[in-house]
Amino acid sequence: MDYRKLDNALTMALKEVEDPQKQSFNVFIHTNRAIEVAGASDMLENLGVPNVAPGKDVFTAELSPNAISRLSEQSWVQYIKLSQNLNLLNQKTPGGIRLA
Image (cartoon, rainbow, N blue to C red; front, side):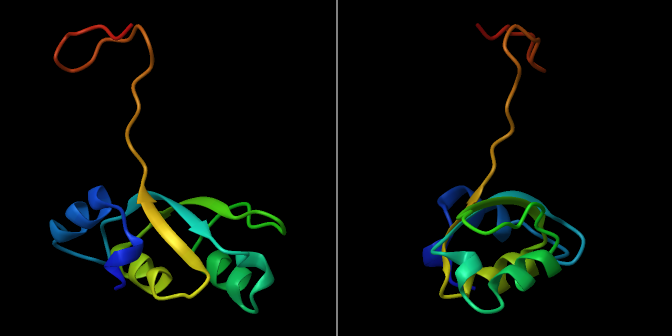
């Protein structure tokens, strides 16, 4: 795993994983010309990354820690960022506070 390519939130979340095959994370994958590198689009598709298309350089996916590790080692991957859970405006949060 190339931790230099992971954001802090993802690094911390990965440290808490008990079963790297079962748990998954929603992530953003930022690439350098990913589709132009031989085999890059195939690798993304094999890992279950949706909407792999020429010209794209940012992808979203739900990946296992093992898949994140494999991607982080690729030269065409710039960095991988953990997606944050978002709350809708004017919806109650678990603490009962409304967001404005």
